[in-house]
Amino acid sequence: MSSDLKFISFNARGLRQAKKRRKLFAYFHRQNTDLVFLQESHSSLADAKYWTNEWGGRILFSHGSTNSRGVCILFNPQLSYKIIKEELDPFGRYIFVDIEVQNRFLTLACIYAPNIDSSTFFVDLSNFLDRFHGETIILAGDLNFVFNLEMDKTGGNPRTNFKAREKCLNLMAAYELLDIWRERNPLSKLFTWSSNVTTGIHCRLDYFLVSRSLEHSVKDVLFFTWSAV
Image (cartoon, rainbow, N blue to C red; front, side):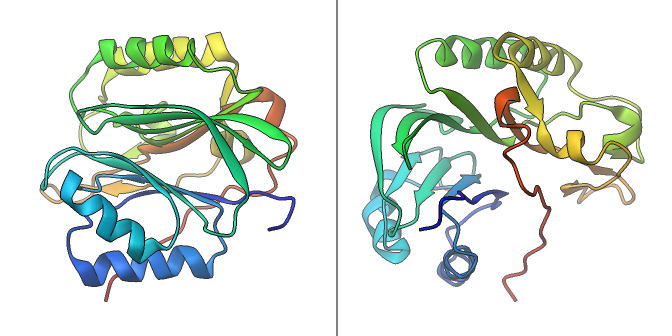
């Protein structure tokens, strides 16, 4: 593997269809991705061994149900790393892990936040971060709110999960985390979610929040589109 690490975060909206899952896994391999953060995997304990064999490397699972929640972290089988500590949410909302990789000590978190305005969820995340000790933090996933109604949402009413946003901003301040895509793209409007019910509503709900110390080390932060067809 190169000295540069490559991460992808993706809300899969379910991976139970074998064709979709295998195509996604193949796509991640073609991208030479080192670590993949998946949300809404819809995995169960019975799936873990089978999906791990399909991927070909280690997967950390936090299972939800077969039709909701679930998060995973996929490790490239060619990546040399050591997991120092891990904690998995029993309800499929988050995975925290301290790893050593390429002489770096990182705290990683894959997050799928509730779609209700749950301030306590982000308080809990902050408490979890207190127990991890990586030199830098990379938190990725679907936070289910927008930071800026003008820049991160179009259509619909001017609202989001405000309590959750406030607690997340407190967490970011406490741990010196940046919304790295917005830092690189202060005037851009790109969205990661569209309403299936009301046309014209689009939001950026998916984020990489990284330690401020990584700001100048990150080369690119890109959105991608993918189709199982």
